[in-house]
Image (cartoon, rainbow, N blue to C red):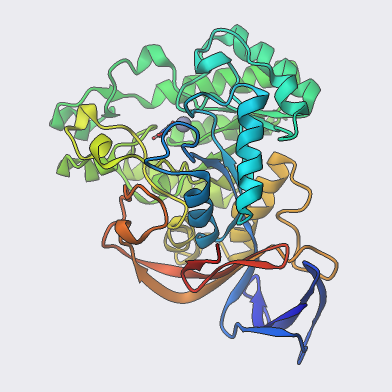
Length: 426
Ligand code: DOR
Ligand code: ZN
């Protein structure tokens, strides 16, 4: 069966027809014919998005998200591959769990689900997990992370970098010096002081990023920095990259758009780790993403149950939903202000993430002979976010009621339509 996407604009450029056969783009031209047609006038075609940082909560918290509901949210957000973080219950620190996540993702088939393996046993930071076994398992783990927690011990981090170097894998570090964030509830600054919340200082992130860049350089290993949140971290990364450190970094949509002034409502929907920083930090992160200092956008999609969010601030869990709102936030913060064009969006949401993770068939050019793994975006579309309408089981979106620009109209994974007009196909 063949499919034609008619009149679509690859990377927002001149409109063309794309002919898709057996999951592959076989012709690009004008007036192409196929068994099925998607009318795509005015839509932008991008390579399918790749999220390096998703929490799917299975196993353990299936009341908030499952691999199935998370896959739907991902497809609806334009994603064709996601990396499922290891802080599940039980922790994904062994081959049995990572193979379960990988297999379940394949059964659902809406998005390629790649499990992230834990760096240390039980995320305890004490003993390295069996990285080699996970890497050699069917799940073929390529990213290891204790995300949620920092690999704080420098010797453990050094050994982890040595192992992953030999495996051709990468450590994704949640940079948070735990001694500097004991009891922390909000960005250490004016707002936290006014609200009486214990501060999470920027230096707790920056000191770990600096240390890990030095360690990665020393070992000759690759390092990936999760959810960069401060202007100072961008400076450290700029310096580390300038001296040849193999470091990549991600920023979340919420750190690009939101800042700690939102905390004055005391609504824990705004509680996240690392915390929302200042307006100056958010502006510095947008600039760092535009100039490549920060390589990619990753969602840190973190579903939480109503009872874990709708409670007093200090008891609430940190995290917010992100998969279905990522592209619109990137449009609002980066495309509309002219910081990124659609080629740039393809780079930060698809090509670079696929490269960092070593995925050979994602983030590919829109060209003849390439997989039809695509996202079709209506750049003029606008939609109002309603947490209850999102595909996730949880509803903890900080964008409730906001009207956002840029809608994902369709997502294709190797030629199969996985989402269309706001509905996942499975
Ligand atoms: O806000 C966060 N939520 N940050 C993390 O590092 C972990 C995540 C979660 O698992 O909920
Ligand atoms: Zn994290």
